[in-house]
Amino acid sequence: METIYRLGEISCPAGILVLVDGGHLGLWSGERSPAEIDPALLGVDDPAMVADVLGSVDLVGVGPDASAAVRSFDRQPGRVLHDIPASRAAELTAMFEEHCRGAGLDARLEALPGRESHARRVRRTAAEGGGSFLMFGVPVVVVGGVPRDRHLPVLASRVDAGDGVRWAEMSVRVSDAEVESSVPLGDIGVDWGRVLFGDADALNAWRHDDPVDGLADVAFWGAAADEAAEAFAAPELGEPGEDGVRGWTGLAVTEAVEKALAVQKWKEEQPGRGLMVDFRPHSHHWQVMRQVRASETESGTVDIGDARLLCAMTTWGDGYFPVSADLDAKGALVAVRVRFADTAA
Image 1 (cartoon, rainbow, N blue to C red):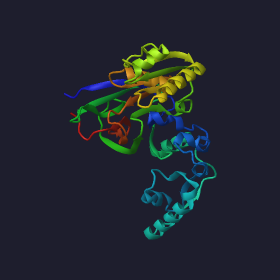
Image 2 (cartoon, helix red, strand yellow):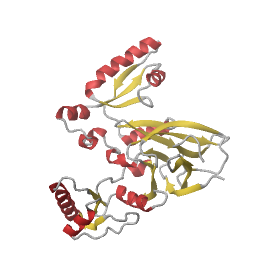
Image 3 (tube, helix red, strand yellow):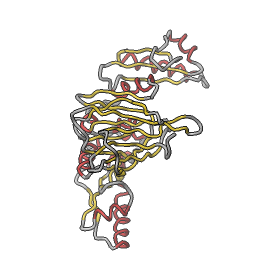
Image 4 (cartoon, rainbow, N blue to C red):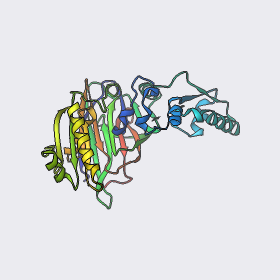
């Protein structure tokens, strides 16, 4: 019999569930325009590229055949093409016009007056029956109709992948009804090896890098860790699941920054010193990843307002993983499922 693991529970008072790579939530704009996100967070520092990113537009299909045209154009999920760099907007519009002529479709692309916020993308996608959209090129999945008034278990099963046991799938269980059908919602894109199940409104209050308590930790590990610990009189970090990691916990942010910079400078003074240095502000991301590192299931939760969010490692690393909505005989939602492997052990 297949073993089912309980990763934790979520709550979703907004009634809209978002599945997103938790490592990318530093890019989440909430109700703000994505144009307010610093391009440096995208790894962009060239002035010309920065201007191109900041000048990006969202293009929407209009006309009698807009929905079919955008879908068959197959550049992005949904009917809006998001985050198109300024330098590519005219080219993409021309390509769309050529596509429509060839397919005999009456549609065109028009730029929205302003960039669509990530929160608005979520609400629109949910209102359209669920699906996915791109956040700076990374697919995010949305499903509405999730119960608002109770906690929902997040369950998982495993598969022998040949090189080790990994997760076969994860699912948010909404009811115990029999599954009669499944509807694909799209892929979730993962670059940081983790999946976060979160309430739509709670994500707008997510603090990815800023500490919620004004404190931070500094951790370091590696071949030169003992030498560094002696040089800086650093104790064992003492965090569950982090044996051999040295550093300091619960420091004021300014002190933590000073210590992190000092250890990093010490590392760079002698090329070849094997040392990793990690500055960890007590953000929501830190809270949940602290639990992930200590958990046998590599999962953890964080409460934001009345919502509880859950983050778990994929165990497959990065990739694109299909998400589906399981429905009962009446078409009611039974579960939201992320599939990592084709067959479960």
